[in-house]
Length: 300
Image 1 (cartoon, rainbow, N blue to C red):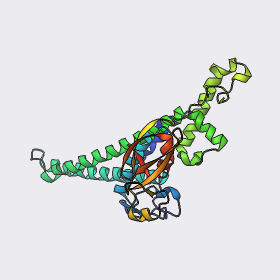
Image 2: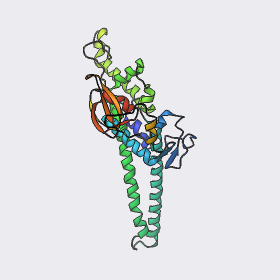
Image 3: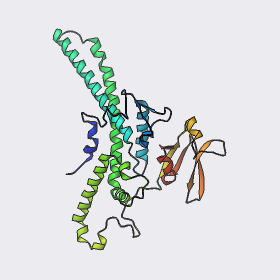
Image 4: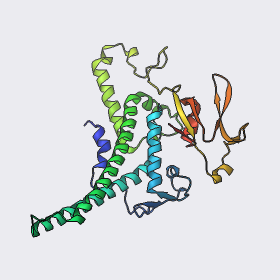
């Protein structure tokens, strides 16, 4: 059975949410979620200004940042499981809320029509349309961001299928594949790779000598595995840590102009470069990769 992108995106249209609302780790009133970051390291991908509290606004800003990072990054970045679970849960709750408001609006309209079908529209019912339309527009904007984010990730899964399979087999990556991808993305990757391998075998590889049938040969002058372009130039913004983080951030140092900065090394030039907090720079992706993984910079 094949799997396509709709299997990944279907969660946005289901009647149920992807998070059990009775989960004791995620008590929530719909807008604010209390978390214990010591239980799950992935729950640290939220705003630092309010430790232990995750607001809907902070989650949305974080989602926009991750979406921008994913689109600008040449490689596949770690999947924010906790953040996406909360966003999808809130999305479903808002969809239910809009549906309830809409049903009440139509029932109200039907009642007034039954009284006098020639009477002027009820002003209260007419005025209710505007906030409902605004809520629907906000909802569609969020759905667009989530869909775009997931499609961007799936396009990288397609493009770097052999590279991801190599990471899984060699285990040379710092982060395991099951943490880099969501459960649905991992299933999509496995099935896509199986279909791709079957296609290559049936169309080309079975007609070639056995020594030329490997699709992951890296011994020749040209590697058969497409890797991300580590030398791609990207625009980076160096995030400003909070006052508390400044005291406990070992990677921060004071530059020659008295500003806090991170130091990166450019191997080709054998030179250290200071990235001042709040600054914008153009750097090769490989140079700033670790800073991005540690959430100290953003791609713009």
